[in-house]
Image (cartoon, rainbow, N blue to C red):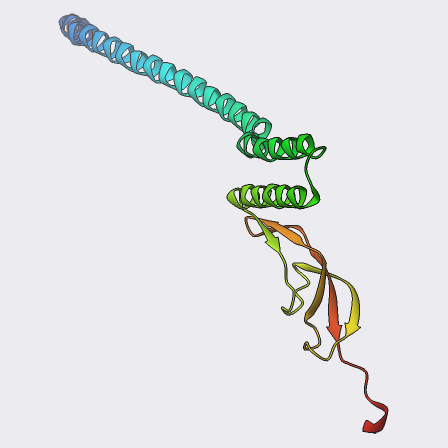
Length: 190
C-alpha cells in the first residue's frame, strides 16, 4: 500500500509543473479575449453612434418634409395669385375710365380683361369645357334639360348654359347644358 500512496504524490508533483506551464497560455488567452471584447465593444459603440446619427437624420428629414408640405399648402397659389393681380389691375383701370369712356370703349376693355383672365387660367392648367354640338358626356357635362332638335343628333349638346372648367384634366365644374332629343313625330307619319 505504501507504493500506492507514493504514486499519487508523484502524480501531484508532476502536475504542479504542468499547471504553471498552462497558466501562462491561459493568461495570454484571457488577455487576447479581453482585447477581442474591447474591439467588439468599440465596434458596438461605433455602430450605436452611427445608429443614433442615422435616427437623428431621419427625424430631421421627416421634420423638413413636413415643413415643406406645410409651405406647399400655404403658398401653393402664390404664382397664380401673382398672375391674377394683372387682371385686378385691368379691372381697376376700367372702372377708373368708366366715368369718361363710351360704351364701345368699356366693352373693348372688358373683352381685353376677360382675355387676360382666360390666358392666366390656361397658363395654370385651367381649361374651359365648352361642348356645344358635341356628344353629351356625363363626366364633364351636367344636363339641365332636353329639347327636341332637328339639326343635331339626339344626345348631343344643343346649348351651353354655363361653361365648365378642368384643372389639369380634373373637373372643377361641369358644363351646364341643354341636350338635344328626338324631334316630335309629325302627325301625318303614322
